[in-house]
Amino acid sequence: MNQNVAALIPEAVLAAAAVIGLIAGSWLPRRRQWAVRALLAGACLIGLTATTVSIAADRPELVFENAFAIDPATNAGRLIVFAALLLVICLSIDTVQAHKRESEFYVLLALSATGVLALVGANDLLMLFAGYLLTSVPTYGLVGFAKDHLATEAALKYYLIGALLSVLMLAGIALLYAAGHTTGYDELRPALADASYPLAALGIIGVYAGLLFKIGGVPVQFWVPDAVDGTPPPVAAYLTTLPKIGGLIAAYRVAHQALPASQVNWPLLAAVLAAASMTLGNLAAFHQTSVKRLLAYSTINQVGYLLIAVAVATRSGLAQQSLLFYLAAYAVTNLGAFAVVAHLPHASRIDDYRGLAHRRPLLAAVLVVCLLGLVGTPPTAVFVGKLEVFTAAIDGGYGWLAALAVANTIASLFYYLRWLVPAFQPAPDDRLADPLTSAGPWSALAAYTAGAGALVLGLISGLALPLAAGPLR
Image (tube, rainbow, N blue to C red; front, side):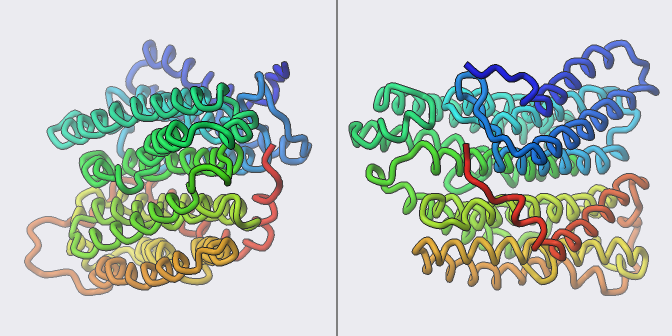
């Protein structure tokens, strides 16, 4: 049994930061709770360094009875998670600084992000479920962090749906174990090829039901708008970004490594779910006036595009690199949009952004880059991600899905422009209060960094895409 603990330095450092932060937060006075934030940021930097070393070593391996894989997908996922977590920390400072539960906020972030990393590298169904729970439970607390009536309602809905889907996922794992007599992906694939069709089909549906909840895909997307709208912007930013990274890479790894092509037609199921997610997310976003709910439905729409790569996981050689690059592009672009929302906490409606270009031109520029980036406008990173995903769909024999994705992309321009147009109009003279009051410098820094990252990643996509290639272990 390979028990190479050094291979799990990124995960171990983040988990250690959560434990140390929890203990330290109990003793630190309120004015020094920032030390836990610094601890978490330091853990992210160490994790990025360790991941870079792992990439340079280029030694894919399976550790701890093959339950966890260290390969290009794991390392790419680690880079995205740590970079995104640093952005979340930065845009959170203005909101939670000097809060009486500030240290708890960062501890919950660290615990949930550790679960995301477990999802990214899981090569066993039991490890997958452990990562799912570790990602989910801390986020229930994060969603209810504000403790007002909206946050309480959002946390309750999120928890109840999450509890139901966790039971379905565990039942699916049990059925797959009954069908294949193993939980390891490498052994499960050949075992399921000759297994009972009903057991295999129900097991796959159960496992993917849990993963769809984690990523916010149809038909279990109901929690997304309420959870995003009822939480502070930093929590909404985290919720719509990091768990989706873990859930989508886990879904891809299960499809690529564990599911046989000769049994259940799971690629068609994933394609239908992708089509439903991108279309429903678009339709629901058309008439939204709340900026957070608009971004929530935008998230569901983006999940549809990302699920295309899962649908062609075994049908196209472009699937893996398209998924990983798109995840990186989506993470930085989505966090940039939420950083703008966090910087303007009183601008909750689209009309509140009137006059933004005149008052804060740089922030308006970031909003333009991020919203048009989510559409897929060149030269942003999401444009390259969508191009890669659509090409993978055509290469995998799902031309109809690529055509539908292009149509949805064009349609999404409508509601993003509904947000952008008021930003360039003059502010009304009859405002009783100024909704463009800033929260502080840190959320602005996160917005500028993410906006620049969305552009730079698109421009250097030729260098970044090869990093996402390489066989799974």
